[in-house]
Length: 560
Ligand code: ARG
Image 1 (cartoon, rainbow, N blue to C red):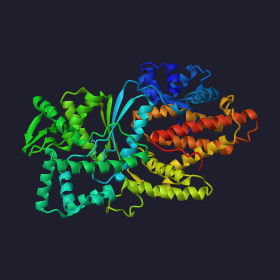
Image 2: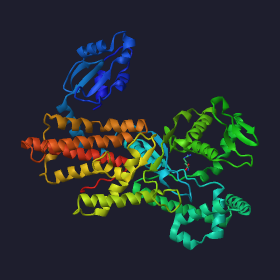
Image 3: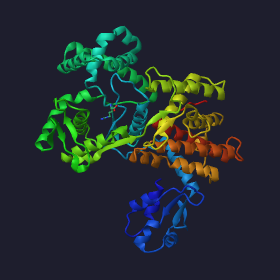
Image 4: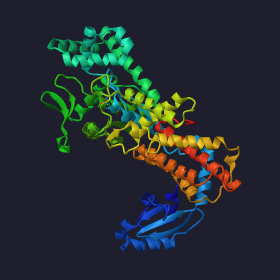
């Protein structure tokens, strides 16, 4: 149930709609005073009364019922107490009915959201810098799908540019198919790095020529490039598999080469294209931004030109309601410019373009040896975390079966959760030790809580699914309130493009479950009724945590 809406409907405030009131209702940090609260400060001006009086007057008017058992004023806040038994009954019934779909909705039915994420560069390292875009995008993809949207996952490959001429040049000089076969992307990347450090004038000219050959469709050049692309994709797909990330389209930059013409023509027609030192640009000075370069002086297109064509293509192909770009904040200016150009072109859908910016990830253990100087490959981070997870898991439970399988879920989960737990714009310093701490705000803590719940349920006799709902005690009630927040949490995560809300939800529920587990005996409850009720609550918690972790792309081991 949407309590905020429920309360708002019964609380008329002049000059405000029910939706506005509902939006103002918060969950207080200390729920001993109330489960929901309406801060009355902002009404003071409107009503010309002190907030404390407003709260008191509203409290006196509010009709208590079987859903909200009472409303009372505390220091300018109007606090509401939820009827705990009513909430328990409703929440448990809904979880029983919806199971793996609990938290989902049809909210986005008929709407499409495009999500551009991961967007790797061919022949370049898939490094730690790609972690956030990959897992944030993957989580948003699942969250929007869960809310009924048609999500379109797009990997906007960096597969166009003069660097591919360099790569071919380097390959022809120093490379060979056997090495590429054996070491895949690492071999290709080494060639590229070597070119950049050893290239002569002559080689640069050769590289330009190879790029021209690719553009002209020369068989050999195109063939080599296709091979490099295939190898990169093969490599990244393996990692996407481990991270549970999928895409609907791999249309990268090269896909838009023949789609830029009409867009450039339209820019011209609308008088938006001006010449600046030989280049064709859109002047953005009136908006306090540098010019957006559409064509270089030699007539070549740029990253931005391709993005412009891609935006049009996506609108035409998918008719999106929103088009998200999950890209690091370093590209803030690029997207501001891009969206501004669309707006200047008179595209009303420019307002539906969203740059979902995120902060940087670095390793606490920066000294980690890599095969490529300073670049930290994402695969190495994952492998290392899984290896450490194996140690941690074995130490905790030496007799555990399928240790490798559990370690993969725990290790990958720790990397994913590490990138998703904080507000996305914050820079993150990843620490293996912290990420694998059983007692921290970590995925392994949440996974362990799930395993604990599974193990309790494994010892229970069947039938608890139909247990009668009792009036909950404090720990039970706190747990129920927490899990009841799931549907709203998922929605908020989508609205704010913030999967961290789901990650934090997981930790909150796990903490409340563990308090319940230690304070209340589940299998040794005082009465048979209470035992069954607690088992049902345990089952519901497991369902909700599983749903939440799945949205984040994290596996749930049955035993740990
Ligand atoms: N390949 C780019 C990079 O690594 C990211 C592309 C993001 N997507 C986009 N449509 N510009 O920086």
